[in-house]
Structures are given as C-alpha cells and as structure tokens.
Image: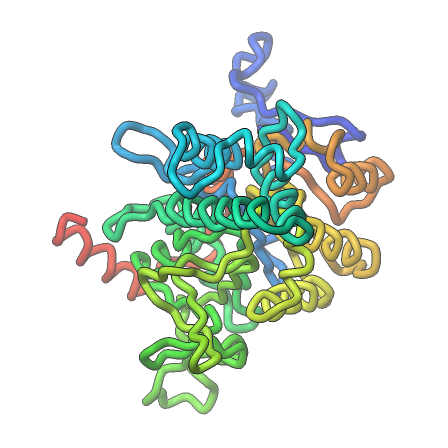
Length: 401
C-alpha cells in the first residue's frame, strides 16, 4: 500500500514489505519501529471514519473480490464485457448484423476495445441511420444490453461476502449522535444488500417495506426505533445504513401500468444506466436523479467525510460534483482508495486536480493506493459488536453457513 497526503511532502509514501535490515525491525529503544506509510494510512482512515457525516462511494473495485471456486473474478470489468459482446457475434446469426457491420455502422475506431464508447457510438448511429442499417444497430444495442445484464447478475443466493460484511460492521455501526452511514455505489450488483442481510443490517434503499416493494424516496428519511423502551429518547437500532445505487440495480423494474419502480428478484428488464456517454443525461431521470441529488447534498454538509473506494473517477456526473464540493466545502474531508490511483492521478483529470491540491498543502485530501481487500482489514472498528451481531454469528456457526 502507498499513500499521498500533505504530510508526505508531495511524494507517495510506500508501506515497507520488510523492516529495514539496519534496524532489524526495532527502534533504538528496542521497540518495533513503526512503518511511516502505515502510520499515515491509519491516521487518515481513523480521521475519516470519525466524521459526523460519513459518506462512502464505491465502484467496481469493491466487487472484484467476489470469486468463484476456481479463483476467477465474478464481477465483469469493461474488458470482460467487450469480450462477451464480441464473442456473441463471433458467428453469423440470422437476423443479426455481423461484428464488422456493427463496427462499421457505429463508426467505431479500429483497435478500440472500449465497450462504453462502442455503445455510445451505436446509440448515436441509431438516431440518424434509417431503414436496414437502423434496424441492425438497434438490434445490436438490445442484444449487447441483454448480455451485460446477464454478466452483472453474478451473485449466488448463498454467496459469502466476508469483506463486504466486515466493511459494513466497521463503518455502518455508528453512534446515535452521528448521522447514519450513506453508502453510494455505481455497481448494479447486490453485494452490499446481500452482505447487509447476512450480517444482520437493515438496508434503507428507498423502497417500501410493503409487497410489492416500490421505490419511494421518502423512505431515505425514515429510521427504525425499538418499541417498548422505557427511555423518553428514541431507541434507534444499531445496524442500519442507507444505500443509494446511482446507476440502478439488477432487481429494479419499471411497471409501466402503475408508473412505479418495483423491486423484482429476477427482473427481465432491470433499470440500469448502461455504459455509454449518455450516463450524464440519464442520471437526471428518476430514480437516478434522487440518488445523485442526495449525493450532491450529502457531500456539501459540514463535518463530512467522503471515503471513495474502487471508483475510477471516469463518470463525470459523479466526479464533477465531488470536485465542486472540495472547492466550496471547507469542512469536507476526502480519502480516495484505489489500487492504481497513483498512475491514474497523472492521466485522469479529476484525480490530477485532487493530487495537485494535496501538493499545494490541502490537509483535507488523501489518496491511498490499495485494493478493497487491502483496506477493509485496517479500517478502524470504533464500535463494539452488538448483541444482535453476536447472536447472528452464533446462529450462522451452528448452521454451518
């Protein structure tokens, strides 16, 4: 792991794999010599989780730890999605265009394997082509989106997600004097819902508790208290967090007859913002507008900590509000965690600005080069395990799950 903050003199400080030989792992007084990089990482994480308002933004990087029995990553990357769509067109199919025809109609540059750009170009071509060409590209778009839906629905009902569970236990159990954790994610999958259920958390995701479960943004303002408490003050349950899925979810489906969004376990046409350059425009339609508006509002509050994990800052409709909040909200602290954040801070314009602010001495900002697997075990666990959590662990051990 490595870290860059205003304390590291504009340089990346890397965690030592082994203690330096001349010290033999000990300081002059005989005690273990602390690793400067690890000390700074611990300081930054401890500071961010103690924020009154804790906001977490996650991306694909938090799903790459989910693997099958062979050790293969289940969550698809953009490269995997490209390969899956291309493979579907490896052989000619009646009624479908060939792969070369798709690339030609979309005017896609030769050698470019960016699925987001291909779908963007295809969508543009669909709007101005006519006749047979339009029919072919429309069929390709529908086919590609169907393939993507299948790929992102990778979670088994009995999947064990120890890292996600640990992450929630460390961050979502907060003092009643602090705001509930707000977790925003660009992922379509149900990893955090699944982990929350297994760990005994209540997930407030904007859907009603009735059946069928219907999206109602008012539910984000609700909380849960225990009845029968002798205290005059509300007795809030401990394990609850708010989940906002900025790009939709594989179990959301729009009911055209009722004009409502329902939660459907096996949705045929889930509400997703597919990877293409129109994500910015689509984000201003419901339910995505509610999600992004809540995110913009949350990061502008006082005493707020924003922990960004596994998000590449490639979505302008999310990255731009973060930079705007950094510029205007002096009470906002931001920690960006990504395995390639050092390399990307030179190529990505948004990360480059954050890096430059750190160089200028902005003490609110930090960047940590680490994976989700690296960071979860060292996130401070500030609250003791609740009785409910201990009970859930005992029951799970008895059941062998």
